[in-house]
Amino acid sequence: MKNAITVDASVFVNAFSPEEEGSDESMGFLTRLSKEQIPLMQPTLFLPEVTASIARKQDDMDAALELERELKNFLEITLIDLDEDLADFSSEIAAKHRLRGSDAIYAAVALRFGTELITLDREQLERLPKILNARKPE
View 1 (spheres, one colour):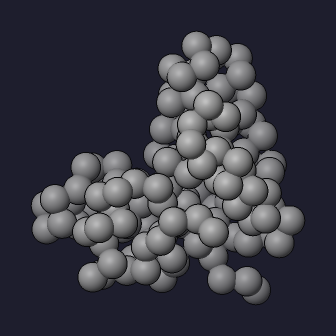
View 2 (tube, rainbow, N blue to C red):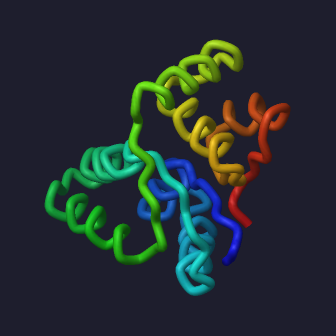
């Protein structure tokens, strides 16, 4: 089995926002993940985060909901529920590393499942390398 990774919502939002810098690179990265059938370990938060961001940016609810459906089929995704234990772990990471709550949830999933975190978020890239492998998409 190929090694799983965790991909922050920032990469997905960038990929589906062609007006943003780096969008083509992010889309290329996601396409490669799909082709190579790289498994993703994603917090359930990932779906509403991406959907909400795309709906706001494009002012198109239908397109955002269609994207959510496509993402479930496009990639090999395992969704990880935010239960009380993961919430506590995320809170500890958020406090210790001064991260936003949603960013800490992705870090907690990556730590719990031993995955690399792929992100465009500057704070994750700066603050998490001490505890996990966090990098930009290549």
